[in-house]
Image: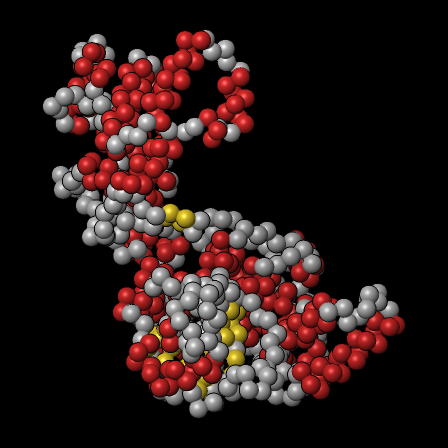
Length: 597
């Protein structure tokens, strides 16, 4: 997320899933700005809360322009993907999407200086984009559907913040309770340390805990975000017996509190085991934070140590040089990053722990929040997905459900007729679009290539196949005569009639095979529904008429779709996905529900 003032001064934060070490831009390339990084982890709602804050900042300070992206790129455009203009794609979207004066703006291709609507045109620079926003921002206001899609994700803030929190009772060491009173946000670092632990982290937990022993534990009410609470609850973990942490029987009324406290204590102990164990006011502290770790990793990737073995004299000499440079240049005083473990140890040294006071407060704790939101039924999940797609649910009353099979068939035909490419198929969103046109000349040329091919146009494979068969003289004469007739100039009507005759002859041959009998055919003067009804009258009834009757394409299409939908057994599949994307919902297969009816 980048906030930049149009006058050249700015305030910003940069929200991404990773935290790369970035450098300042070269003079003249980008106006003065402030950049920041937020690690939102698995909680995507935190990212959208940042979007809300950025939008409100640009609304409060009209001189600011904000640009925000994440590890997926322009995720604001991803959210509004259904409403974007055709020209906008990931390759040309950089430096085009901004929050300005509390609204989303998109700079089009045609407004880039010295560029026409060329999809391969380079993206504008930051100074160019800011100059356009400052002079003609009203022209670049994003379309209403795009703004509505983004605003829908951030509607409800700041009130929605409280709805994303969860309060739960935890049986914790008194030291952790004291630390969380001073810094409640450290619960996030502890949960992440436990949730993302590796075997090396658990080495500190295979002995009696040094920082947070299990002997002095009290009940406390801890505030999590719902994401952190779910991460802590859903992971199954059995503590090492040597740690001192034991759990009561699962039937115990306080089992959940004991389990949450045990997991949270492991997270805090892991953080403290990674601490440098040096007072934060010393210079050495700057070499224990995430900034130093990223700096050191960058040096190793650039072969700074020249292949020297770690711990060797030359390696240590280069390491000390890097530490001195980092302390003097990269991490000056006032910008030191303190690791969570260092902060916890510092708070333990400066905070008094009154165990009796904690026990008195534990006796009158307020009730914890209901966590039934963790359990989502399949119907509730379907409801959430449909609401996300702005779709209305079909009626649950079978008498009100009007499933038109002709609509199902027409929807599938509309989908098949749409343009598709390596980027995917276009959905038939609107019925007002133009119909497919029929070009007679192109159709005639295609038939000429099929029916009027000369012998010179046959490839080697065709010639090889011809040599494998023993044609009689009579067959050769028939083929020659057929080729002569095909070489003659034929009108489009004659070509179509000839093709139809071929198809009719093929139908007669296939009618008596298993392939022909597998299709539902139309009865003369009967509709598709009547054809399906007459099919149950028996295979011998009207056999001669059925032999020459055309195949009922719609009935076969619907029958195959229903069979595929039934095979999904209520799960997601190609049939339901395609039809639901076009607003068509099929009923459940009552034949397989086991009901007596």
